[in-house]
Image 1: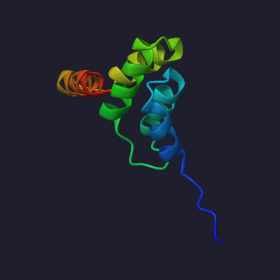
Image 2: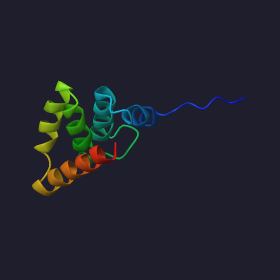
Image 3: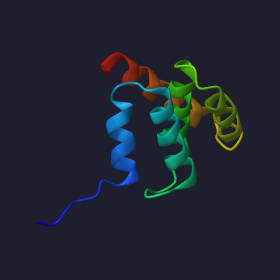
Length: 89
């Protein structure tokens, strides 16, 4: 029987459902670097923001760094997505 391996993205998404700061941070890293996905700074910022809110100190620095590459509208969009995720999870 063939064994199916979960992708790094799928593993991080599954772990992030619990709100684990390290899993949220990992999703930020995946989207900020474009590893296994198209690079998306808005989504990366959202995940770094959530990880930072849950106590991941490294996420604060990464969130700040990518915010410098984003315009105000993109940052607002990322913050809105983070609030929506919090209200749903």
